[in-house]
Length: 236
Image (cartoon, rainbow, N blue to C red):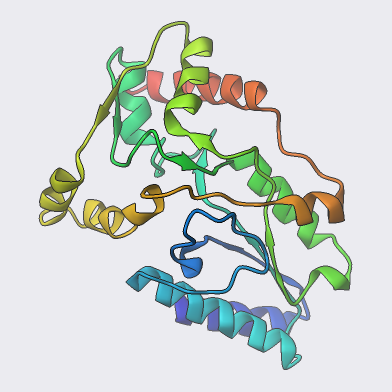
């Protein structure tokens, strides 16, 4: 599906003479031994989805080198923030929290991990779309605040929600068992390696090139809680 998607994007953009800005994840980079990931980190996938993403990225930049279309890519880790309903800090977290319960977590909440704020991702992609030709033909790590644990991120949410948010953490073995019956959980289990060691995105090259900073952490937390109360309060 992803290779077909990439081919269709290349064909459509090339026919229209448009520049193509693609949002990518970092699955294709695989395990990094805790070392920060930047634009020079080689693709070394360790999962089925990572292998698919590596082939997609290679196809996109090959098309750029061959002159089929002008392409750049913005890469981001896991998301949170307004509208991020299908992420680790999405529906299964916020729905019970807004109802007065505990947030459900499927990964290690104490692992150091980069969580990209959705508005930062959107702003970064817009920046790439309006950048000069020297931004094309290569990937960029989109702007993000320093990596931290999910527990630290949730503590900021607690402050703006006005009460402590408890966490219900599903153990790895339970994720595997549940994944036998729930396809989405099975897919999450395959990527759980990202919480086995520090999983850190280094966005310094993007910041230096485009003079763009991510939204300050406190504001991001406050805006996320405001959105969650509005969005999930309607369904609880």
